[in-house]
Image (tube, rainbow, N blue to C red; front, side):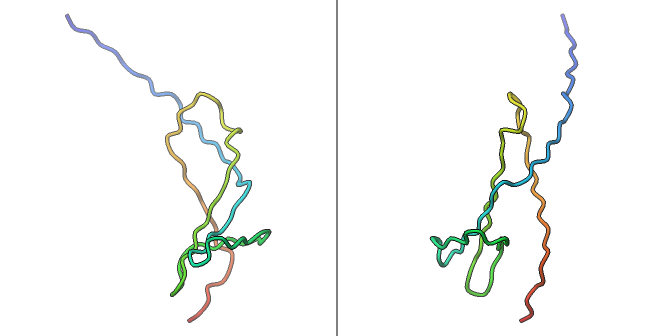
Length: 83
């Protein structure tokens, strides 16, 4: 006896969420708070490493769904220092 079945993949849903909070962690001074600073530092200098944290309101996502992944896009709006 043989059987045959086909699976139908459910449609992919894409949801875009705006960030609701962010912060910078400075490796050399991890307890420093940047407060209401409108910028976020990410990367390294010769002596420091900066990490950015971003928070999202996940309550806007549909319930009982499995998340397949997340992609974050960031835009650089400043100037790179020379030297």
